Length: 189
Image (cartoon, rainbow, N blue to C red; front, top):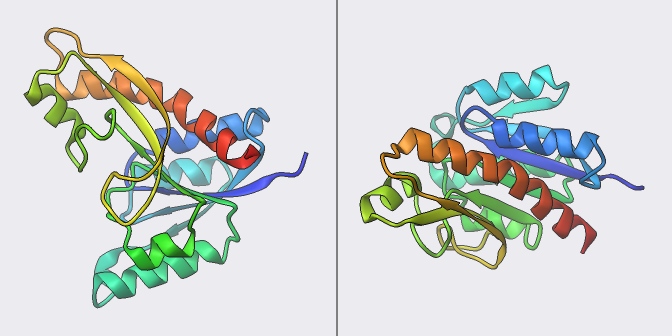
């Protein structure tokens, strides 16, 4: 089985990246995570290094503006020759210059049932709205925020007394299943 090359972008703990790495290594996903990039120094970079994966850090403040950073990020990701680029808890809006560089092979993991609750505070927004069900979405990235053709979704019930942390923990459990499934779908298409 030929292995596709996957680059994962993160901003946090990298738990979804690790779930994807494990699914690749178990040959559930026909690929391998070849690099993990972040926009800030985060625990997920160390997690990736511990898994033996190459990492890179692209802090936007090291570039004069968002466009320059977006082009540099595109070039850094491109040098890893990815078949698939996965935004998994990457807390930056990807500029058109980046999105267009990986058209049809760039997906995002979002902690809500899109189109509900786009943006950086989806879990809090769902709680504030009083919904009984939220979840996670994997979708192709386009030029709009948390928009683009949906690949997969999984529902997660909101429990009485949920906090942002307790609800997000259950959403992450769903994401750890959903992200590998979505990557498998894209790579086998």
